[in-house]
Image (cartoon, rainbow, N blue to C red; front, top):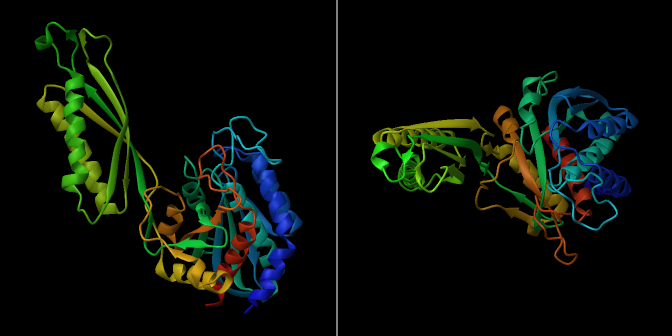
Length: 394
């Protein structure tokens, strides 16, 4: 077992290096499946560390550190993509790409994984098994985890467990947030089209009012969560846009609605989507029109595995102290495509405290002033190194 003080010393030695990497990524953000510069920089760092790698899922990279002895394989994951936002911070590492910004901390995740890789590569002579480094594109919108899995990232060698993290400014630097079981929701995008028939507004009996139908559909949809879903199994159904009609004196023949569904388990997801379809079609039909539901499947729910969370918790206790381990009481209805990894292998996803009230670092992710307390990067490196080693030694 590698001593914790030794790991802390190694993390301190490379802290400035990690911060500079994070700032470089922050200055040059790239959107999902466009992360070519980011990919090439990651490859450059891996080559400097003499770590073998392959390109996967277009702009993704998978590195592998092979231990001296044969054993299990653990994976550590970092997402790579930025968001289509303008960086409004006034800092030396402000985004140089107009309309693009690392406003969710993926720059920090990559820097942390590269820092962990550097330490683990130095320790590979004492590692039993292998460590895979998963640099994943397109987490924000397109779900880069899925194509990586489909291209075999969890095989050859077979991955036995995976750890992922996410910076979180609602938690102070030096803390972590963990949760057993349900962590994040599944997501589905829904498009609803209601078809009616035009007529003059003075003669509504000659038409079929798509707006009137849409009104009844909207009212009925609100009963799904309140009356069909078990109160112990939460769900969210939101209709965010509604468009229809041409003029004040014409009965509308078409209405379009867009919305999202968030659920925490497969059964509730299936129930909610079935009832949406049923309401859209049958309410429309009962009023003489036609309703169509188009579902775009999003991410699956993220469910942590207890044994993997136990490792994160124990390492947090050793490295950060009991008072700095926050057990999240409720799952989030946000989404995260690390869920595809948790569905495929035993996994744990946790939040890394990156906020600092005293420094004014409080802005949440997906906002134009988002930043982190960079002191959290060394914490992330320590935890991921320790997570990997503990998993392989067990």
